[in-house]
Amino acid sequence: MNYENYIQRCFDLARLGVSNVAPNPMVGAVLVYEDRIIGEGWHQKHGEAHAEVNAVNSVSPADRHLIEKSTLFVSLEPCNIFGKTPPCTDLILRHKIRKVVISCLDQTPEVSGRGVELLRKAGVDVITGILQEKGEALTNIRHTFVSKKRPYILLKFAQSKDGYMGRDGQQIWISNAFSKRIAHRLRSQLSAILVGTNTALTDNPRLDTRHWFGRSPLRIVIDRERKVPDTHFLMDGSQKTWVITEDATQPENCPPNLHFIRMKFDENLHGQLLARLFDEKITSLLVEGGAATLQSFIDIGLWDEAVIFTGNKMLGEGIEAPKISGTVTEEYPVAGDVLTIVKNTSNSR
Ligand SMILES: NC(=O)c1ccc[n+]([C@@H]2O[C@H](COP(=O)([O-])OP(=O)(O)OC[C@H]3O[C@@H](n4cnc5c(N)ncnc54)[C@H](OP(=O)(O)O)[C@@H]3O)[C@@H](O)[C@H]2O)c1
Ligand SMILES: [Zn+2]
Image 1 (tube, helix red, strand yellow):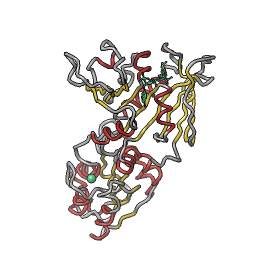
Image 2 (cartoon, protein in one colour):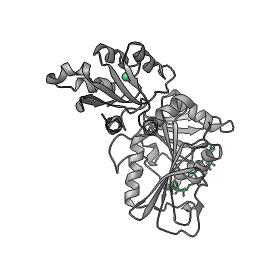
Image 3 (tube, protein in one colour):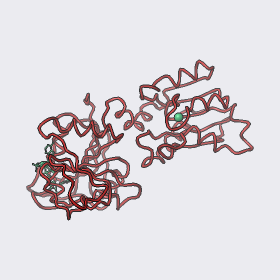
């Protein structure tokens, strides 16, 4: 039996939950009897059944007697705790499944290693570490959240061929329509999206996912002195929005999902914002610009990944793109643009 193929299938299933499972991780599971998949499932929505439950439930009546003779493959260690649903370790024992193959351990402190231990003590043959790096990459948002107690921070920006992000006070399109779709897909996959004051003023962004599908993230704008006018899209109440400010007085007729949140700008603003996001169980943050806001995260090492679109145009002058150094993990063309993914390998915060 090729363990890697079945674990890969778990990853593919897991990804189907991408926009809907936060703050939980994406997880996929398959049940295999003599090299035949008899059941498969994934965690589809936060608060609903885990992947293992869906895999067991998907087995046809004709095959149900095979469950206890099958091997369960899961992309992540099965949970052993009561969250919004009962522990998956109970389900495995109740169905007398004797072999479980896992990609990586769950780093949630109450689970980590204990799910495996519980199963082994009950006599289940548990194999771990199959395609472990890929499994960890799939759960990096959740793992960053539980281990660093802050959201996973993804920086995203477009730069011209000569390294500029835009021009002062002027909105300029640098990347092409395909890159824009990829950017909107990213928005649908992360839980919150942040911009600085100048970007909010100059670009009047909507920060929604209109060029993709799936839910739109929480919008956050840093606006110390409340410069962004009520007439800008960010203030329209169409999506939940936080305005991070020093003056949190609610305006008259304020839409119910527009929140003015007071923070102390001279006292570690990033720390205050990330702590607030952690408290609200927001597991991922997309920082979209502009240059000053992105650079402020880079300078203090508070980022995990950067997605950079380099367009085909030269701007000659303008606002310089942030300076970032990390490990390039992927680089590929997008219809004339180049997409580069950089990981922060020295991130210790
Ligand atoms: N190419 C792209 O991908 C892209 C993406 C986004 C934006 N842009 C372009 O970038 C330009 C704007 O960039 P920018 O660098 O000028 O500005 P920005 O990052 O959008 O905004 C910077 C301002 O936000 C506030 N701010 C942000 N972080 C803060 C912090 N930690 N503490 C206190 N205040 C903070 C400050 O406003 P105050 O000083 O007013 O308090 C700061 O001056 C626009 O032209 C836009 O078109 C390009
Ligand atoms: Zn579970």
